[in-house]
Length: 442
Ligand code: S3P
Image (cartoon, rainbow, N blue to C red; front, side, top):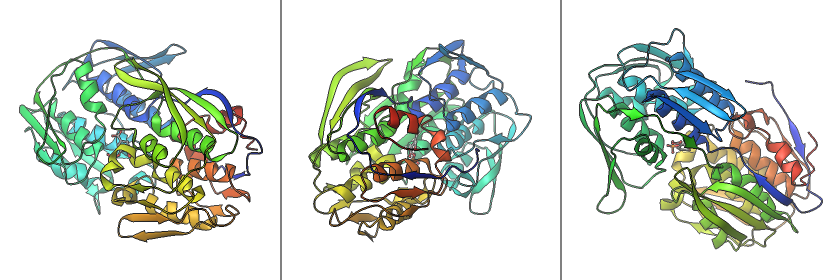
């Protein structure tokens, strides 16, 4: 990874204004490279996120035998076919990306060769048992470091047993790993999720010609099924703008008085839009315009203006639809009138950092009052001046961007220890904010 990049952010003197576009959706970008590599034929991907995380996935799929090239028009992947990937000659380094590591574990479980996977210090501290435990049921073998951490060796199998698994945590990564293993398993794979999580894997598998059956579960959630071994046929993909990246300029515009911005072409998959619902409940002046279907996904333009936000109570069952947006939502809550309660955030403890602890520390360092009760975070709402703190980002891109947003609306400058990891999901973030008038001096 690049060297440390500290940054000091002062209040934006004028409101943000103008039209912009955020980079492609990270979840969809990873999946497009993986599925295209498993497909028969040539896939073109437009709008791929060219952030560090996704580039690691591209490198891994190349190391497994797919031919992947890019030019100014987009990315081209010549697929190998399900079951046809080949043993990588070296260690697969997934960098900072949990999505890359976990989804690829599923693919490798049902390929008959051995691979070794690692990542950066953040990824090497994250739990992998949530995928290795169920995937072991295929007949694949996983050898991890103590605590189920990377690096790990994966001895896949060409005769994988299909899994039938109920997710103990709401995780699209775990769901996807099991479905991807099922593509080359001998029979019916079934995953039950008690709360619906992002369904990009299911949608994209269908796009590549796989039959995926989805039915509602009694009491909420979904059952997802597919039958292996199956074949994927190459299909072109258009990646929408990432709603999780749009969250940062969006919240900044709401917090900085006089702002008026439009973020075009943002993905509006209903399992990703919890933040927008929550901001509207807080009284945000936010409209979604021009809703349309692009490349099979719902997209629209977000029009946001400076707003007077009120505190909010966010139910736990909304968490999967906005899991990556809590740090920046917590920043919005610190500027809102009245307290907010963000419920059921246990999964934040195992993100790129312990995001629950790091978000609390980010706010407290800058004068906000925050409490944690069990898995709920309570943010007191604005009472005095904010800012003036030093933020530690723990190799976490979303903490770094949340700290920038906090600084842009603060009374006193905010110092951020390292913004280098922003490159994992949002290359050009500071330039994009400055083009909207943020005035960040890098
Ligand atoms: C992702 C799922 C979520 C999310 C991550 C991307 C995906 O993780 O936090 O940024 O692409 O499937 P979990 O599945 O661990 O909740």
